Image 1 (cartoon, protein in one colour):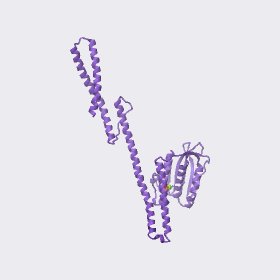
Image 2 (cartoon, protein in one colour):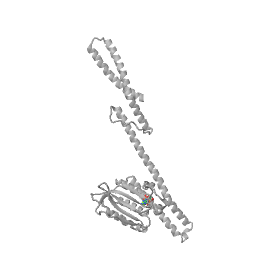
Image 3 (cartoon, protein in one colour):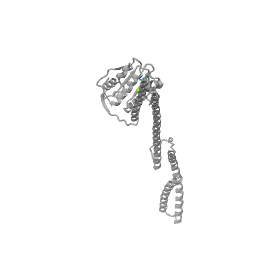
Image 4 (cartoon, protein in one colour):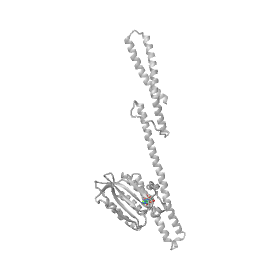
Length: 354
Ligand SMILES: Nc1ncnc2c1ncn2[C@@H]1O[C@H](COP(=O)(O)OP(=O)(O)OP(=O)(O)O)[C@@H](O)[C@H]1O
Ligand SMILES: [Mg+2]
């Protein structure tokens, strides 16, 4: 295949060039004059054969390397091998250069696409594994309680209600889990569209704090909102930012200590149009090694403690997704036994200083 293609190109190039060269030489000899017809024919034939051979060899050498390279690239694509090819400059001498360049570009593109698809595939596998693992715990717990009740405990006045309540708690866990899973899958597939609007930041914060006041009181934790310009407006999706605040403040309450404090405030960022919103707690804190992992799906530092509080380990990954979708930044600082501060940026509508 290679030889046939190579000789066809080179024969055509050499044939045309040799014929032109022969015609020019013949015309020159006729002009000079003094040659017999036999001499003219002999010189022309020798001229034709010689120039054809030289041009054919030169042309083969020039084309051969690039044809071999094109063949290598295409063969590699077929074998799903995507080597690093020498960077080819955009300068193209002829069609062969163009084809070579295009095949290398195609190879790079296919490599990227395969990597992207593999990542999605791994993500799916991991996601399904995580979900089944997380579902198993409450389902088996419910099964256990119901089995015990059916085996006679239902008639025991002392335990029947306790078991039913425990089963109900696990049903609630399943409900939270499915709700969070649906939300995260919508965020990760980009199905959840943001509805960006202007809003008064203070109103949003106070709204969320009010809805969590009951939880805080139950845990004996105080929520303090630091004062800042009540006219400050930010541009974001109201419901999503509320969700971020709910998840972060809920964590700050959940992982706090008895009598602890949750402080919420706003600081001006170095960038003129951005502010940092922070949620600071006086709780158990997070070890340095776990800091980068807390936003991973289903990650919980202390699984038993978090589960006992109804945690699924999805709250912070939802937070991270929403903040990334807004093009904003998330910062987590923590000191074990001292407390943690979760902050994220928001974009101000006008340049009001804090
Ligand atoms: N403010 C905090 N202080 C200490 N640890 C925290 C804090 N916030 C989160 N964590 C740790 O990070 C883990 C992940 O948090 P995340 O909010 O994603 O899950 P969760 O609270 O366990 O469950 P969910 O929010 O889905 O109900 C928690 O289990 C906890 O170990
Ligand atoms: Mg949480």
